[in-house]
Image 1: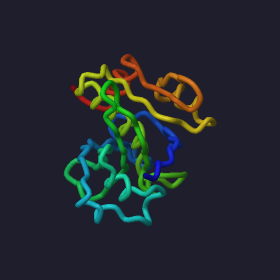
Image 2 (image 1 turned 30 degrees about the horizontal axis):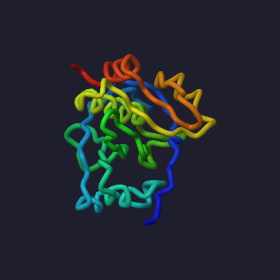
Image 3 (image 1 turned 90 degrees about the horizontal axis):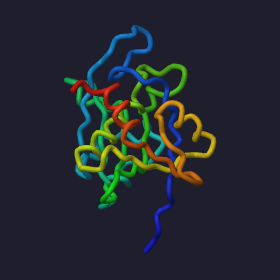
Image 4 (image 1 turned 90 degrees about the vertical axis):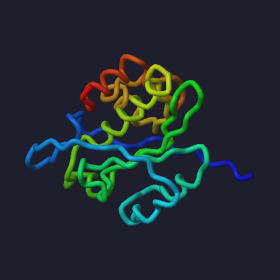
Length: 174
């Protein structure tokens, strides 16, 4: 059986916002996170994404969630792939849609919103908010500063209970 290559998390956490924020107007938009299934691959336009999200949907140990603005579920703002490891949640991939990247992005706060959701899921599963991921080496300090993540060793990072609570309180009301 072919062993899957580990992908390192390499998304910039642009800004911790209240939900997501239009970068021009400063307007805040409430969001929903909705699980995607393999039958939903048509919702993902390959041209809008760097990673192979259709491939993530096919893996039995993964759950993929889409971040959308409430009442506008057809436009995906970001995606996250998560695995339940029995005592924590592991973040396999995370990505903002193409129009939410770079200097011309429409919405800020997408990556932070996705990570906060993963922490919330880790609490819901009884894992005290623990979220683990592998980061590109050059982004370790960035994740420590923006997500309050702890560098474990090598490329491994984790978000512990207190940091998870801070992120959840930032993005989710109650």
